[in-house]
Image: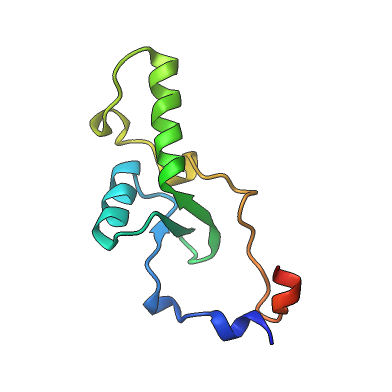
Length: 102
């Protein structure tokens, strides 16, 4: 069996664009009740996954760096691609077997 068995069509998947703001990403995750979401670029290509932890650690690191209280308004210009850990969740081929995936 290959991984295609587990895939959903794109129109059934909630995703975030890499150029969305941190605020937009968090609002979308909250609305859908997800703790992580796939991220795609302007060409609709998968670029990674962003999680609640990615947002949290960015805000914590930013507050430590600036020594000032950080809120969503102060980071509205920060894009999802700026906090994305690109090497963490690579894409896989549709013909990959479940054994290879594991």
